[in-house]
Image (cartoon, rainbow, N blue to C red; front, side, top):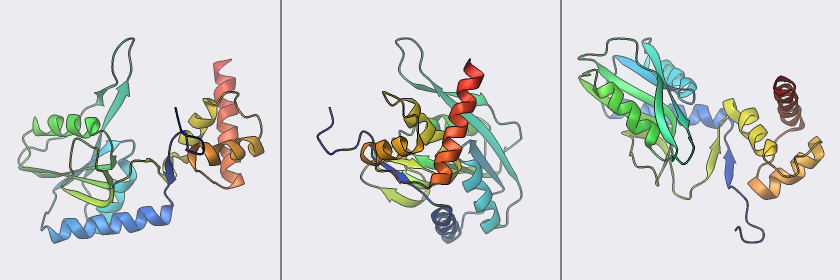
Length: 210
């Protein structure tokens, strides 16, 4: 049980400007290590945008992706599974694997195991945020997260906040009510326009389910 005044889940909303700064810092550390990737592999979906930004900074054009998902079955712990495997040849190539964050590390472990099976010359991992609790330490990261929090990237704000609102009991029915609940429960403040997008998505989901 949370202590009075403590959030249900401590979160941090990352701005687009912060993402660009982090990607620049990450690219600088890759250059400083004198690592020259032949190909960049993004982990879908979170790694797509960081990988594209790194390609821009590192003057790389060879960008592909793999997709890993988590599922929770009956009486089973959450597991990572490969949904869309690698579809190109990386044998004897320098590979940079990219994701947005290292959290538990399960996704990264599976992705690295999958890519190593394709015999790259060298495989290195880069993320924007590295959480110290992760079971995997990336070769490159732009920011170390010491105190755990859920990181909400700008490409996932509507999805993540919509999920929080959908699971509130009772579920808020107005923007004002949602804003009032999100601040103490998640330490989140976003614009009214964002709330309008969230409620539009929730309405669409409810209509699809009916």
